[in-house]
Image (cartoon, rainbow, N blue to C red):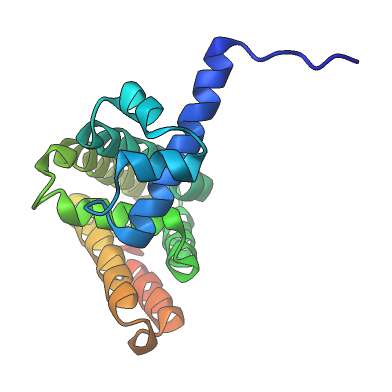
Length: 204
């Protein structure tokens, strides 16, 4: 039986996926400053010229990669937590999935942190992607808390917006400490502490 030939659109999508995978791997291991279009081409099995043709420049590739990372992060960590439900267990599931990702030290997470760090130094053009993502995530958490409050799960006086900011800062702060000095951080205890904070601050 003859194998069906892929369309040009399918071939382009496949090559893009391979390039993004290579970019995420190299950013995670070497950092964005050391990444080059030539390295991306070699890692993905294509020429540096094709990478340059597809993205135009390293900066454009970094911006596109940041968008891809946040898209994958949404699908793999946020959506599985079911933030459309209306009980605090959903937010606690976000915490558990986040700590699972920290423990894995996946290329996706490491690349995300490296790109976030350079977004406020050498690559400020990356900031809009992270700003937009964080804004949407905070809004999702706030909406979730308000639905849980309507069911009576959340204290009337709890400030949902401030808590969303605090929760995101807490999780990222623990992750950064773990990446810098993994032997000094007990992630199991930190995870339980984060759950305890949710219960203490929000639970009615």
